Length: 400
Image (cartoon, rainbow, N blue to C red; front, side, top):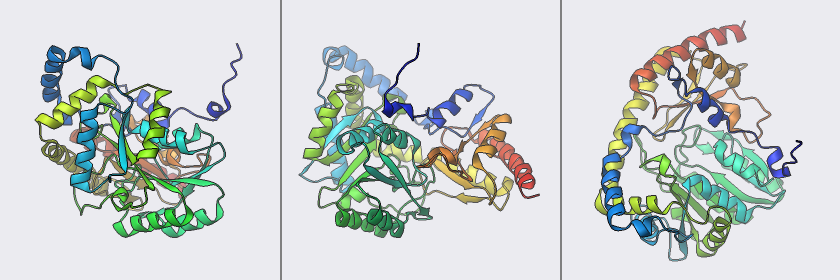
């Protein structure tokens, strides 16, 4: 049978990260490839208590259809926390609960982007978002980065020269994959440029509460006075990823369109887990839980950085993040991240090559991404040692 797939799917490739994760099902593989939180961070006992009570007292509601916008108490709790703790959101904004932060990105693309429109993103950027945008047959335009994130001079040049730019996509805090954080001054510049060239900003901020060092930087949405920023967040990184619970906060008119778009896909997100999260926020201290998670990840980040300093070739450049889940490594000139990761895989250590995160994935990248939240400290020490040995041999070969 010769299947005639739609044009929008023809050019899409399987997620490189999801394909790599298939290999990591082998328990002997040390995986730095995933973006998974550590199971040690999951509030499993608290959720068990809440779930048992919900089944005993609210089963009929929890197992029934729900509102597309989301479970009202959770929407209100989420919006209030964003507003009071982070100054995100105004009386003109509304909030929708989504099936993971990924759906918030997809819904934004669905309601704003037509085929042939352009979207500017950091280069490199989150592969899940890039594939979501590609599915709408838009033109992805990568904007160069420096140590402080997306370069504003390069962004302005792209806004001047690229036709039909509708959206700027950014992960300004602990960026995936590089771990970089954009300073406040540059965030304001981005907002000013978006206003000058009349484009929307999609601010993807799933990691921002996972800070281990440095000073807090306010979200772009907290500076938004024109209703130009769509803010995407998630409970995945601070509670548990398998619950698939995210949200989008944006002007009421934008959320209304997202509600219609969501009704064509999954109708509403899992109501039972929305109720579980709502009860968790009511009964427990989320900030204290996040602080405990940060302690786990701070230790793992520091172990990985120490081992990298000891084991990696000094010519490799490493981005030391102040938070989040990832480290970014650039190999010396002439090296290819894809080749390096393939060789590391042969030694049963998995990392993600930088090409997976490029807006134009036909190009080469000397970078690769490492995750430190999932592996144990012992796995980090062993795996980085193996990567260091592979790197030494590979660089020696390339620079003959």
